[in-house]
Figure 1 (cartoon, one colour):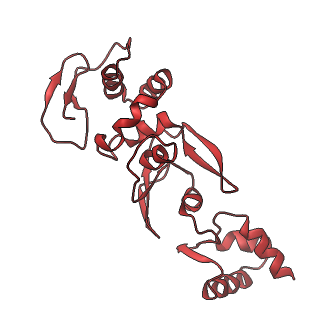
Figure 2 (cartoon, rainbow, N blue to C red):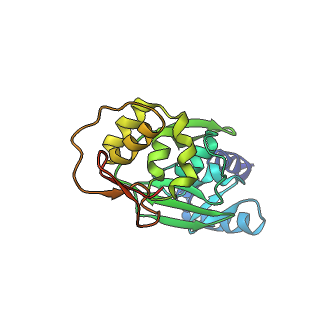
Amino acid sequence: MYEAKLIKTLEKMPAFSLADVAKIVGSREYSKKLLQRLVKENTIKRVMRDKYTFQDDDFIIAPFLYLPSYISCASALSYHGLISQIPTSLFLISKKRSKVIKYKRDIVYNTTKHYFGFNYIEYNGVKIPIAEPEKAFIDSIGIHPLHIVAEAIDELDKNKLIEYAKKCNQIKRIGYLLEKRGDKTDIKKLSNKYIYLDSLGIKKGKKDKKWKLIVNY
């Protein structure tokens, strides 16, 4: 009876560790044996070292495996319906070092100094952190080739995009892309150093003097 209640408690957690179970049970040794048995019985899945879950959906699991992190980049843009290409890996942003977890598909965590711009949403009964469209687009720079996410720019909020771009030191690229879609921008004081529009693209292109970009997309 006690074990059934414990399992019901753990089922509500997207992912949990031995320490999480021991905190509830009060015994690390019993918790270790319980987890080993539940994995053997295929009641729970061992996703990585000391991380377990009852869930099947890695979209739910991923933000709770490597804390703190939130779903972003092409994965968030795809969820928001802003790009047509469905990513084969699941992409997240984290405060910790970059990491890849091999699971049903690769779960890719990319580190950032700019940890903001996400909300918690209700997803299949679980609240998960996912980037706002504008932050997901900016997070994608340097992680995806520009052609993967470029179509999303037409649906993004100009003012929020500029605000986030300034915070993330991406104003040259975002300003150029906004003007290309027809938006007027009043951005000044750009550094004179030229950078590539697509940091993952070919290393050649025409220079845009206004935005100090080498346009390689």
